[in-house]
Image (tube, rainbow, N blue to C red; front, side, top):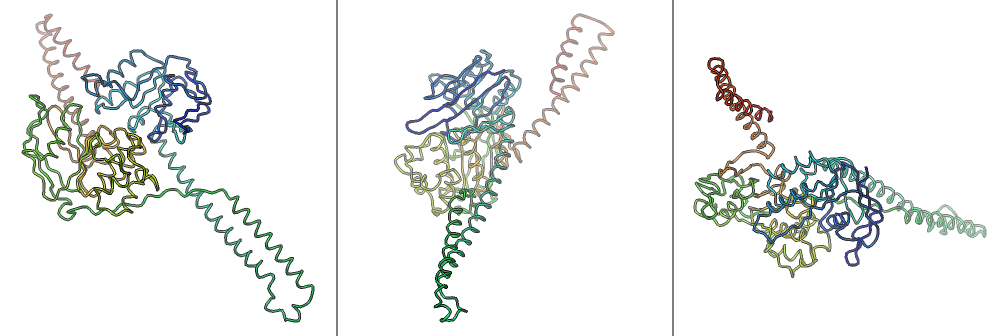
Length: 524
């Protein structure tokens, strides 16, 4: 069943053609992930499909109820960002639309609530289009990916990981096409040079011909004719060279080699300790008596529900509060969403250079990794989008004269391509990285240690995020097993008593124990 169709959509931002879409169709139970760079028009497209805004050209026909879950939600409230997002999600589900258009629905949600939403959408019978930078979320839910690039939409079958694989195949094909083009171009250029040389020599007296033979009147027309023929051939080769369809070289990003301060006194050594530190907000205890240490080169992810005290812990470390001891070798840099480290009147490269001791080649390499190529680096920060400013702030911090990065939700407002670019930088970074994130794929790809804040406790886990989740699952299973054994023992006891002296109270207790066991069995 066709739920929505769009025809010949064209939409401009000032004089720039943002969207140029011939035809879109959304059918019943479609699960579509919409991806593309910041500023490519993802949010605008959702608003056009929802008929919240009109495109300059084209039409949208809705055949069913359509609900838009917007990216930017109301701020005139005392509720947290996560609570506001949950409110919007619940209202959307209550309306039970056949088509949901969700723009960054996981924004401000912690991991528990992301997984709750994931489960809810898996069970939901309607169709949806989701804009999200959360690759784990897209993998779990989507069967189709729409990529917006230069106004056009290209469809890929499968989830986000399938899309990445298909993009890699395309990249390899482009590389082969470039190599084929280069080989052909060089062949034609060599052939052209050869024919031009032969044509030049055609009017000259051959070395083996005597002067008297050269003076024969028939010789000149012969050599002139020969030259004309060679020139004609050369011209034909030149024409083929001009008509040869140019293929751009696939961008290869060079590896990074940074000179970090105090590198020798830093690597694999304890750089700071936290001993018996308690976190509070007013009178509310977030966590008590936390103790752990961090070594140079660690990639430590701080995870936990919203309000558990992740940012509080980060700020205590930065401010070196009582109970926290930092090594003199540590040079720390902090990223937060307020972007106050940027001078908006200066260019991208000026902002980065102002706090960096790295050479310009490395600076440009890092900026290229964040998709600021060539003359892009001279753009003033004030003309950049929010997502682009985040990338500049991250690049500036990354290249600063520091050896320890503290990042608080660095992937917010970044597109998937930029998140992956940041990942590649952090993987190669030889300093320490301590970061707060709810992006499960990002945590898995970066973290070597997990610091989990839950139920007013801080637990340090040595290993990756998947290993941590597996360990938690096993722990929960073991706990459930213990509960089951205890319940079964109680059930046996009550049954024995019922057989000897039946009573209403014992029967009620027996039924209660059975219900508890059935609840446990659901999780098996």
